[in-house]
Image 1 (cartoon, rainbow, N blue to C red):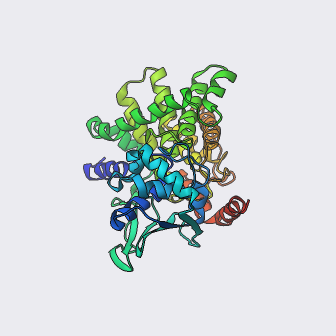
Image 2: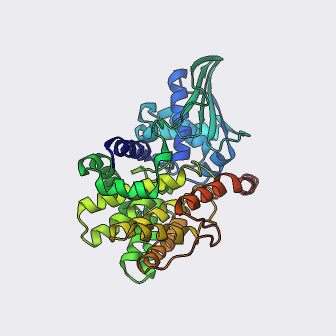
Image 3: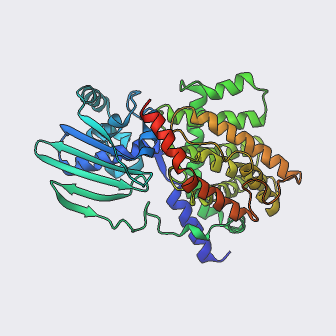
Length: 423
């Protein structure tokens, strides 16, 4: 691979593999609250959070990290406004103290923050407005979690970004990604270039996996696997991966390296491969290359879908893990393609009904399907082109799945949001 293209792939990884604490949708609200508070210069006495349907869907059921087990849009906004550090971006709530939590609990009781539905075609779209007396600050975020397009104080624009400008600070074009290029990159990139990007993902995502297995989060799905399933490497891969997700959805304040805006996608892309490599004594170089492969494949699959949709991101991430198992096991390019096709012939119908602890169960289900697809592919078993939604090439299949998730499931998404909001 030419050095210019190799660097391009590295920059894509750097843009997408970032550290976040807590589910990224409430963190986006907290970030908006923290930025607004900075310009307001005081604790707000009134707040309004306008949220698109997908934001409502993805915040209402998760416990906010560092909140003392509180949940909800109001909590996220007010925690950011009271104790958040806007300079920390996706780790905005790491500075929250017990004093901040107590104040936010009182403010929620007093209904300081109101939530309003934002009828927007943009899945990830929020407008947070804070008031103190006669002063007000409005912060608008679109498309991605920290992509501020407007800051306005007392009706005067402080900062504004062209809505057509690149979002999520994505300078590097994702259209260069394809299966062949991802394999070539993973095989040839110098290890010293990968280390600073991949090492935090190994450390942080496994730390929260161990916390999920030992802590008290959700239904304790990791321990259910451990106690009720036959002990095996596959059981442990599913147990640690789902436990990491459950801890994160359950309010654990440990950081996670995310992928394509999602901690669950970062976890499902990485933890199964790390567990597999450690238990098989795979050399660290091979593990780093497999994780580079898996992360890029998730980014490649998510690009045509978008950050938020009715399509469950665990499908894309688990598909990448299954293909990375094929890669790390010495599979050919065709074996890898077959793993992707086998997975996408099976589970793309899983829809997203918001972020919550049961995402961990979906991840386990998707991972089970992806591992099965890996075993099939390594035995030369694969579904043929034009089986169901499979197309003539794997790239066409990924584009088609992306189209279904981004366009075809729009009405599905509306119905899911309606059921959840008007319960």
